[in-house]
Image 1 (spheres, each protein chain N blue to C red):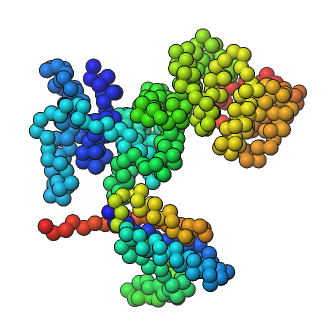
Image 2: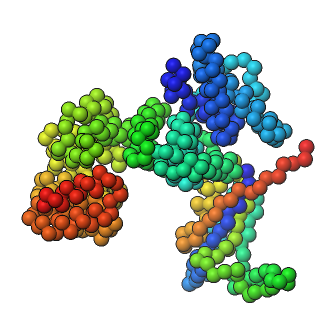
Image 3: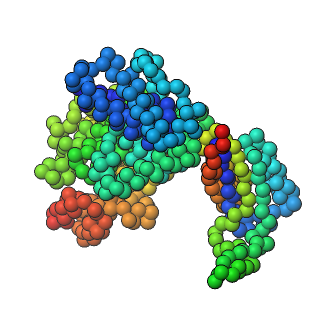
Length: 381
Length: 116
């Protein structure tokens, strides 16, 4: 019970407390104390009628306690409304999660700090969990978070939804933070960052229903994540064509597809591609067209590489190889360039070239399953 | 909050400008200076006019020129009073030095508590 409420209310309670005391550090600590007290009391006395209002009221008092303790009261109190004696009705607590999200994802913070802060303040992950997920010592993550909170306060990063002129760029930063969290697929398996990113994207889609790129990002995550279980078999990587479709999450695919609207923005195009990849048979010509569109939007060489994979399925490996060779100089340090080239060389009947390219990919790979996968491909040449 | 917008210029960025172009540039800086958020702002003389003061063996040592050869040279600043960082960043983004390879560092000032 308390876990569910924690999941549902953490972000709102922290947001409300940041709005109250304008200090992320104080707000997070006060929220934590309020939830700890709830875990203690609610089991004994029952859950209050308005859990959120209870948490915010207790959190405010905890925040005030701390501000007093730190003897900043004289300075700060003028900025604060008087402490509330009675519990406010939940409807009177404005939803300030958007303000909190834009604060945590402000471009004046380092990208790693945005990610960590969003997971902590909005998502409610502990510092230890975030450290595990990003494979860094807890002390390092703690310092990263402290530095970010200090900068927010010292530099006056606003707790506000950006105005119209800034909104498109700032929303882009928020979306990239969520996508970064989603793609942090490695790390400790006890921390499910993909699920966390989907939770955050769902929250954002609810808060900004009029922004097509937000629902597109949610769709993209749902469609990719739906294939998660089929992507490995006994710890080994399984290519899309060989995946057991009965292990795909059909409900999640359906939810993702229902969110698709056009292909105007980069996330919408990527979501549309992910949707096409769940069809049987896959319409590779349509996939190739969408990658071409995505390439126009992003100018990314990696996108060109992906287009080549789709082109190989429609126009053959030679046409694809021409595309790959054109982006090769820009992507020489990218292992998928070499593994893609290797596969295409194999298909046109050049096993020696394929072997050299696979070996180059092998040099660049960082994970064990990939290493074993590439070694199998070389053995099968 | 008060912020310093520290303007770093690419050396030689203004070389080869004709008087008209220089006047237009100055006008742009004056326009920023006239923004109600700007408390003060100054432009420094070229780095060649600098004298650097240091301490060596408890003696004051003077060197001709700026402290070090760097890619960018501090060329001037604005002191602004803005409601938040976004507002200060908006002003900083208008500074012409950015268009010629320079950068602007936005730093909040230390605010000392006033006596009651």
